[in-house]
Length: 185
Image 1: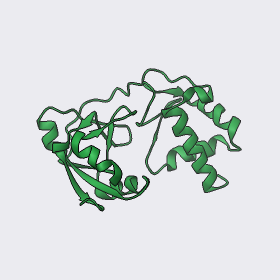
Image 2: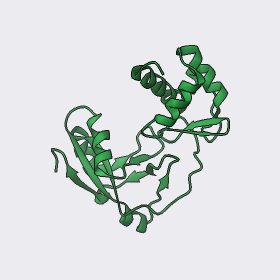
Image 3: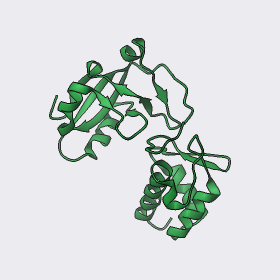
Image 4: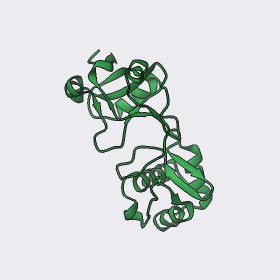
């Protein structure tokens, strides 16, 4: 691929159309979020000066493994704001999960917990380092939250694992949260 910027632009375009606005690329996701790879490839080639090999490199080299390519179908692993059913099975989570958020959001989270907002699920990181990467992308100061996932699960909350290993849940009530790192800790 010609440049890192071009690779980033293609990856952002793919994330956008596969998670939020398939119609803007002339795509139609099926009920589980899949679209024919050939359709996505056509949409990308109409916008960017890249090859099919470049597109496959974007998919394979994505550090977050945002995309799942299976046979001639592709989908975003998670993070959709459009209606899809990723057909994920409920799973018992590891003891602790983490979430990075803005300090500005912390007071609201303390009272109402972590909410999925416009997404299908709350996304949980496997470790503090990953949560910190997420948090630093937000504006201003941040806080890293530790989630007592084992206790949540034992008290009836469901967890799911996306294709790329991100743990998901519908809501994290505040009693399962503890600030770990950042200005609020």
